[in-house]
Length: 272
Image 1 (spheres, one colour):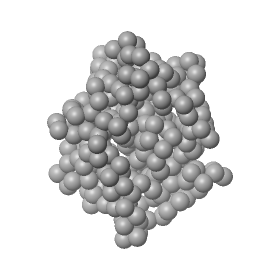
Image 2 (cartoon, helix red, strand yellow):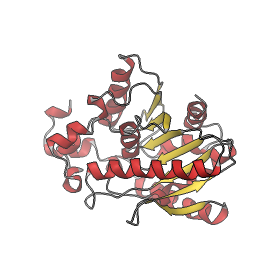
Image 3 (cartoon, one colour):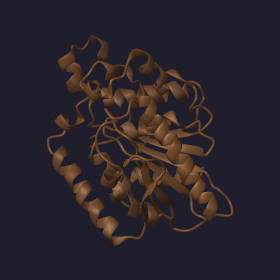
């Protein structure tokens, strides 16, 4: 459908902040709650894996026998920070899951090639840390929201990953190339093809669950459904969930409630 949109329509089709009237208040609440969590619970913060400030991660452990979730934040590859999402950590710790929040450079300081290299480098650094602390390396279960879901799907082929969960993700980058997102991202046609999971099989062979809210923008829902159908038609493991009454921001409530549908899915994926 997006190919029939003019520029203004396509901009609106992917403007999640504009579509959710109180999005600014919601994200400010995330940041406030995340700051409180970092002051309240013990974790290792801002462990560097590169020379740039954003090339670092936070690590919260519940013991050397626990599964490890790696969370990759969203923000259309150009906004937000791992620090805005510490609020998701306590419910996962309570479920017996250790958590790493992985930071990465953002556009326009980094292009998509460099952003994905950051994710790969960060994963290797966390693996090195875990191998130094544990008798057995358990591998990682990836969890990504929005652009972070795209990045999770893009690195699912890494040997230290065994499963993933994508929340409200982007899996075909070509629409991004034609809307406001590309003002800073600066994708060209070659890069959009290279880094669109919808066009590749590198993520095959590992389960990847896909979740999106029923109240999200139609094109956002289509991105998740199309990617699930692509993988499912080729017999790839992973479930699809359309969560009723949730938008691009409130969907994360299902990750922080103890009976949340996404939290349950993450725990199941981590034990796959």
